[in-house]
Length: 160
Image 1 (cartoon, rainbow, N blue to C red):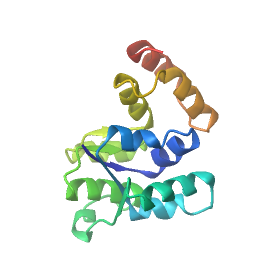
Image 2: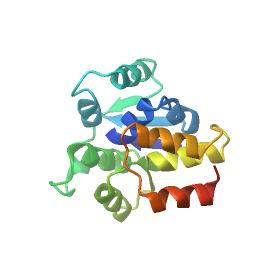
Image 3: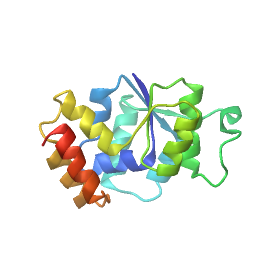
Image 4: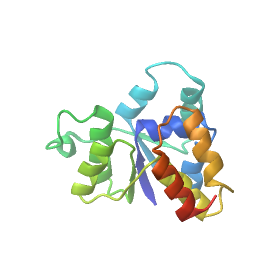
């Protein structure tokens, strides 16, 4: 499965020590160049982990062709624009994107979309991680806001 990943899922998964889930769950993980620019805006432990995966070629750094960027809303973030453009260009099976507006635009263009929480749910379904609750709690500790109703619905639907 070919996926294109945006900034926040990449950073959040690295912050909770689960960046490896991307390479365990998906055969090809594409990171847009603009996403790496955003990730690299300030040095961090997460940046080092992501760069190490790029150097090991477990993640692929790519830049979208301009023709695929045309027609995307200019007020959408640069990272979101390039994620959607690359997903269309590379015929990706899935886009990993947390931004609600970006998710809607991706769906309008026929792309399948998930987010950071969706990656955790898939990892739990495939028995790569033992608990969704533990990882959701770690995401919250790392700074991700998760609606309380959504949090409990995820646990109810997908188990602890």
